[in-house]
Amino acid sequence: MMSVVTRFAPSPTGFLHIGGARTALFNWLFARHHGGKFLLRIEDTDRKRSTQEAIDAIFEGMRWLDLDWDEEPLFQSTRAQHHAGCARKLLDQGKAYYCYCTPEELAEMREKARAEGGRMLYDGRWRDRSPSEAPDGIPPVVRFKAPQEGETIISDSVQGDVRVANDQLDDMVLLRADGTPTYMLSVVVDDHDMGITHVIRGDDHLTNAFRQTQLFLSLGWSPPVFGHIPLIHGADGAKLSKRHGALGVEAYRDMGFLPETVFNYLLRLGWGHGDDEIIDRQQAVEWFDLPGVGRSPARFDMDRLTSLNAHYIRTADDRRLADAITPLLAERLGSPPDADAMSRVAAGMPELKERGKTLGQLADSALFYAFKRPLELDNKATKILNDQARAILGRLVPALTTFDPWTAENIETAVRDFAEAEGLKLGDVAQPLRAAFTGTNVSPGIFEVAAVLGRDEALGRIEDIAD
Image 1 (spheres, rainbow, N blue to C red):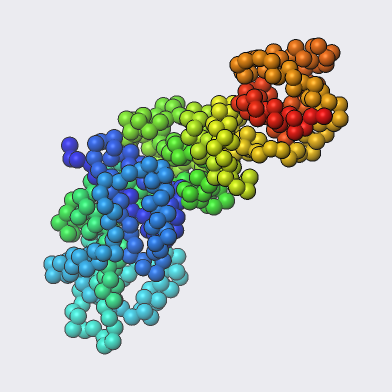
Image 2 (cartoon, rainbow, N blue to C red):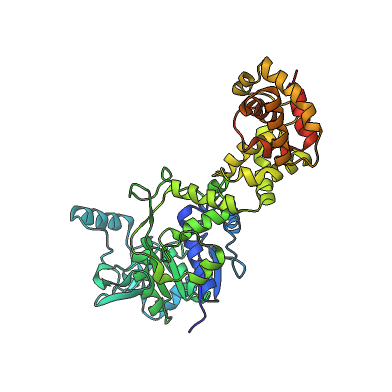
């Protein structure tokens, strides 16, 4: 079997959106599964709309998802002269021709097509005419002399055999009047020169594939194997838009999703392996192939993405999560948390991550570990810490200095014994403790919190409150 070479070829006119990220992922997985190469091509021929910011965002998004490419990225704009040379070769062979249509003539063709309810097809009026008949002052375009009879068939790895009658395709432009190559020509030449064996992309490119196949054959090259993936729709079945979540990959990072969550979620958008939902990178590489791609549009579901993120947060390394939320804690605190605060956050992570669905939620729930003393109390904590509660905490302090080691179990025993000796319910002591430790009324188990804070910090927070 031939060695597989795939490519991801974004236009740098915007960020790496979620549909593009899935295309990149499928190409990456297919190449890795088959032990082949995954290449990156930046299709920056639209110089007015291409930006360095967008190029950087594409690279950053792919690195965040850990989709590594195998060679230096190819910038399509650097190859324009070579693309144009291939068009001239077709001219020399009689497989392309100069077209001297005026803008008015093209407008007339468009109007006629609109009146007849069809789409505009160039009528071929310069296909067999001599350039000697050319009108003055009209710089010509170069058009491809497409086959007019029979049909073009693509054996698509996802869609199956797809065919179009050749009389439904007109003679497309290869070189504009200023001599610059068009997208269709550049793509074909680059795919050939890069040795691309499989083109995996959205099914909105399916009509392009017929024209590109014809062009490959006219240039004397074998077309790649195509695989056209159904597009992603919103949960309501409409084409995916920003209101559904068609955002840049960096937006999901900023919303607190882990890269492995987005990787797993995109993998399952339109591809499946039995009933498996949680699939790690290694399994994905092992299992992925094009027969697993469905023919129906996948539906983007933010709730499902969030639920998957909760799973990956629960299974992530505690220190890694603490590091990941450090910038978020700094935002909330107004300054970076110190080393002691971050040690407490990391130590408390096993409990915190059981409830967090995003890194933002995790940061919110971890915030009390990073607070500097004395804590600011919210309204609910202030209500709990009335004079009676403060007095109880004052009497509790000695009971928390009499045992070693400082563990959740020993703390709980000491608090229970104190409550019993005072004739109090456990809640009469535990709720004021929670308010003193956290500044609010909600937290993980209060004895686990006390253990994470450490004896000095815990006693200090109580003494700041107690009478």
